[in-house]
Length: 356
Image (cartoon, rainbow, N blue to C red; front, side, top):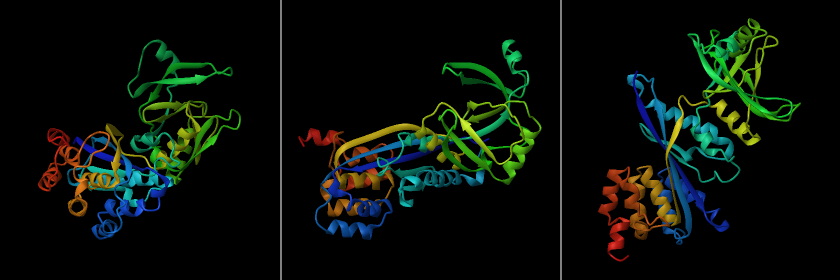
């Protein structure tokens, strides 16, 4: 077993003011795609890079345990494609998500403030690994006697009575069903509401292989409880009343927005969860300084040199954090930091010492 740590960066850039909207996508696209010719045209036009914007990013890590020796680069590209699919419904173009090294992805979230649910971090980080397994026939008795048989795992089950009172109890669920039914067999999901309670729920459909496995699991176990587990959490454990094949539903304690986010992510599950290790934000930066930071985090040396050459004021421009491009680059991008230093870049501390 090989243990690999994947780091992913998500970049947030939000323009300030309605008048910027028509111009910004072009210059942002030029920088995001490393298109120096397109950027040069913007830089030679009227000065539009001095307006103020807010900048920020998330740093994410994914811990992958099982990976073949000759396939080290595939997880980062697969993760990028999955995030692409997850964010596509919210208007993000291909250039906003880019795998830039064997373990680094940049995600520009410049439109995440326009229509995306509050759970955008959930959308980016959650694995959304769905499992189906049977509850032990004697679960209550075994739990009462504090016995956990081999091949079973204890989960907390939350239920609600007719009066709305919530109760939590433990159930024993098999570690893996023997019918081969997996979340990967799901081909479509969408949020809905329970027709009786109006509570949010998620409906899903299996492919032919999943429908066959579900038919076997449910048909051979009518009267038993089937656990539906999402990212290690027991969502529900309904009693199988009849044979089920292609369709199913997930109920749980989530809002309509959360149901939509979960449904989206279930269609595009990650092989491993992504963990936020840093949330970075800086406000009142000039657009030029923010673009320089995008180029830095993407290691676009040609774009960096072009920005500095034609707009030298961006190199030591600071926002609310009083952090320069050199400060920003020095944390994770040593070669880029050397390049910025070469062109006269200084740290915020150095500028302060000089009285600037």
